[in-house]
Length: 433
Image (cartoon, rainbow, N blue to C red; front, side, top):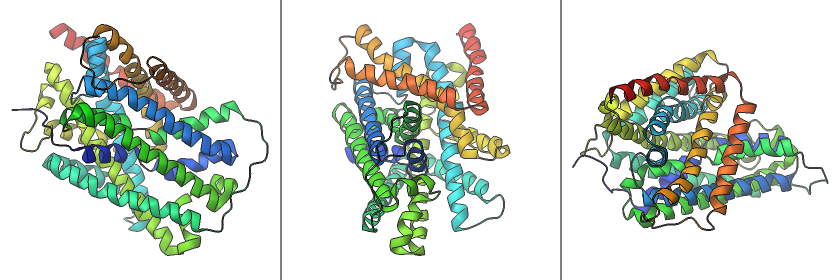
């Protein structure tokens, strides 16, 4: 048999979901959110709201992933709902913008923190970013079993570290004070939600392993809900600890918030611990992003002859080896292309955000399309409160698409242009098929 095998347990799948979501954003964006809002109650409220909206989205994806399990994940949902053309453009977007851009973003962040621990000269962050992609792509090529064990070990270390961070924050003297009455600026509230939702982002990647989960009809929905539940609890507690330890102004002004929380209690050793924790969290995210990303390219190669070379699946390794290799090469190319930018992380976020939210919105709408087109399909899990729940999901995705286009500039345009470059390939495929 050539194709995915059901090797992932509920624990594996939940760990992958948690690992995809928890990333460097929780150490970078709380300061921006605090600066936008300026009130502790609003800050906690948006982090709770972000978790609730993510859970709503996860419920929608749980129905799609259990009804139509496939290694293509969202690619497969779009294919069934809108046809080959839309599926191809999404596969192209994942291969050239969304997933490879995410891998490059995370690798840049890893490079910045690794450089602080062990400097390698002026090009140290670039060298570390390249090494992260090469080594973790190599681990995945070796096999799914090896990749999932690396993932589980890194995830366990990350969660333990985050719990220590929370406890340390509450062990401080306590700087949180009641918020003064202040009018709510809806523009700032919306901008804060963009960063909060980006920090919660990535849980949808679990759909790409839906065909590899043991008892997937039950465990996919459980893993999504359990995983996001864990993340939401951690994120809210971390932000309460930040506010308790530093206060609103301290959080807003901090440029190394984790170290600023740890240092007063544990000294410089605490700051070093924080750096190591962030590195572990980032490596967790890179590994799982590589794992899930190549599966879209595999599905696209299965469906389109010019990309058939990507459909090679190694049964012994339980991985799409060529898709992993191509994904790694494109991610490295984006790293090189971003060297001209002064801020590789920001440029990559701007590059991928509009394209990501465009297709996220289309996936949300596909739930309605498939309910109507395939009413008799077996749905082991049905999204509760239909159609209200998916309407909320689509509305939030549409708003974030608008916000990402409004907030970002030339790099967002670059992402849209690269997406458009897939059109000539699509025209060629349509003429030759």
